[in-house]
Image (spheres, rainbow, N blue to C red):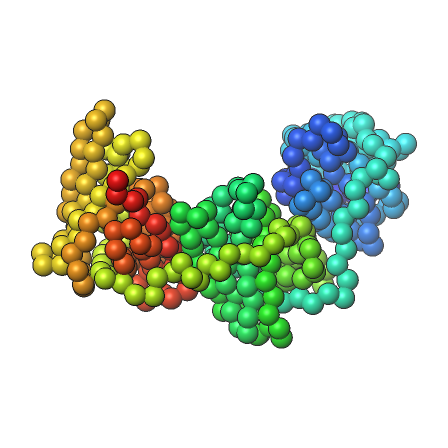
Length: 374
């Protein structure tokens, strides 16, 4: 292999593919990147056997071939080179890097030992606006929590039906659902559970890109593909295994009836909860007394080590008076993920699930369980 590539393009590509790499003592080959020539492209591939990233860079190919080298080392090294063209050449499984005033050799490994990256051919796929998809994912991805006893809730649940994608995440204490409208309806229903790590990488890698994201379906793996602008060719692919099992019937825990509905300014509500959180005790408890007569919410917290906080918030209150306590971290997470200026907070009773959502936007709901009184 011998190629010429721009330093900036190579640096950007290596920064992306190294995201799939984790320190692996039992399989050190996974600490590397596979660099291969395909047509007029240099392809970069990395994997941890659960998530794989493949990226293509338009390149001048002098001689075709492939090489496997440590990805983090190469990424750090390339970032220090001048902004010039770089010549990469493979000799006897080692990589020779030549740039203005630099000639370096990086020890490589046998490309035959590098794991095969799955290929997706002739599989059904859908297209979705990339920014909308990443924005929706960002509103729910942190809700999921690792669980060995219930691996299904460790990931993000996706359900495709007609012209809607529903994304759902829960840790059993709270749940978030985001709906995205598709321009072209799906021909049949699809559903899968994506692990949290690749979901985060999709956001980190693609969130600033405008265009259509392709999602290719297979029984136990999924492919997210973003195209190049210059030519009809993929720019980056993120491939992940799927979590096996059935996602719990989450719709059953979303309350359909409420005793009290509160509508308040989001920023003011968030600020008062954050203030109260500074005075909360070990279980992060913040108490709410909702008065439908005075149209006020009293927010109270106390800690024997710090002191106490009490504040009042005016809003539109419909229904019964109620006192309820929440873990402030869960409330703050929900409010941070709401983009509107006003929120409604629907409460069933002091021990039932409560629903937080933006006013005028039905695409996002956040369900949170209160702290049960002892």
